[in-house]
Image (cartoon, rainbow, N blue to C red; front, side):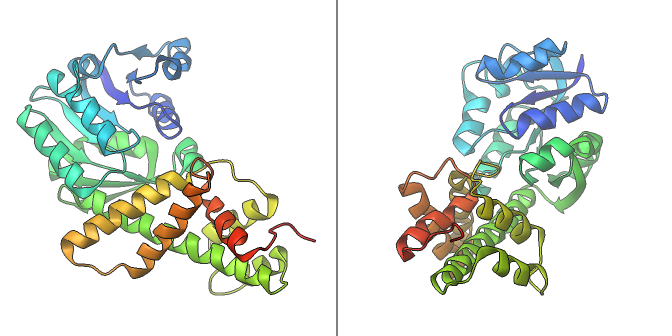
Length: 296
């Protein structure tokens, strides 16, 4: 029997699965589109016929897909994950979804006889490849402890966030901060360009003051290079800000800046930049202000 099943071999999931293989775990993978399984098959890694097949053949299933609807589909579809669960199976849900979606998934897994661990990850494709994602684990203490070695193969560090759902809340916290910060940075750069400042000089000031951070340094360089290849797409950032705002409404937390940031990402999506990196939020702002981001 394989040590761990991995469902979802997209831009994030594939490198995470490879890291489990590199760490010595006996791996079984599944993806809804077969072509993403091909590199694993070529490397001698087994593939499952369906989510149910994966669940029936492993003790732990890691799941990372695009959104809550995809999680629900994997769980409940014909030959879905729930159909293959038993009392010895743990489902580690690593996708970024809403709090209510997380709790619904936890209940479904529990009712099917399995154990649920809520463990989304913070980071983009680069950290996924390097095994330096931040793992945001939550759930029953014993269940989290049991899957900790697997999480450590993909994440550095792994943070125990508490009871089920708190991993999701932590992911929404960090991604709303990410979106707010990126939106503010983009606005500041457009303001500077409108006033005749050049990007390199603005970046030098940012890098040598209290606002120096990897986000501004890395994204500033990409904007200067005109590189909008997706590390974390606008569409995903918009989704996560929307999820944070939904949760904030449920608990009564005011998020006025987050609401404004979401509208900037919404405008970027409307202009066709949804599949580009989150830095592309600056394109909408620059066009509205009628400024060029290229140095003159």
